[in-house]
Length: 195
Image 1 (spheres, rainbow, N blue to C red):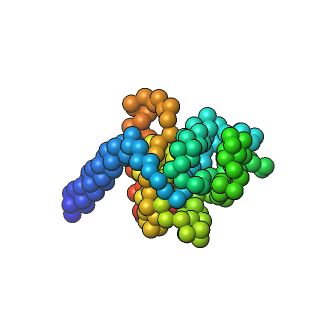
Image 2: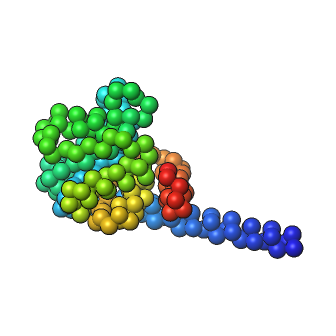
């Protein structure tokens, strides 16, 4: 009996590891694919901000979104992200300020500024898009993040295209670890855990 239970546990662990490995490969493939094309909106996933200024990661995402906007791939940009511990600024609001300072008209920038996780920001952004009648979206984030965000948006009935930010120089080990973390995050999301 104990051997059967141990064998079952071992098999379950092996299956889970295999699923994570397969997902990690899919995430890695998506992370280098730029699918940018004409869409209703460009969605910029939030990242850290420092007292009203975008962190280097957030700035790179915003600059990439600005490039797509200037190429006229979408008429709107949706910035996301809540306060993250800051009492004054939100990631979404900082993104809007940065983009308008670069010449994007304020009416072309939509802000989601309450999300505290990828799941929350994506859900709120999806609801904003639904209410505005927007159906297609270019997702701008770090490459390893795009697979999971696209899945979340497609789950909400949106047509999503990935466009990873540029200027990434992670080590192979760091990149692989990010892919594994996103695979686990994706599985948790599919299980109903809001990460």
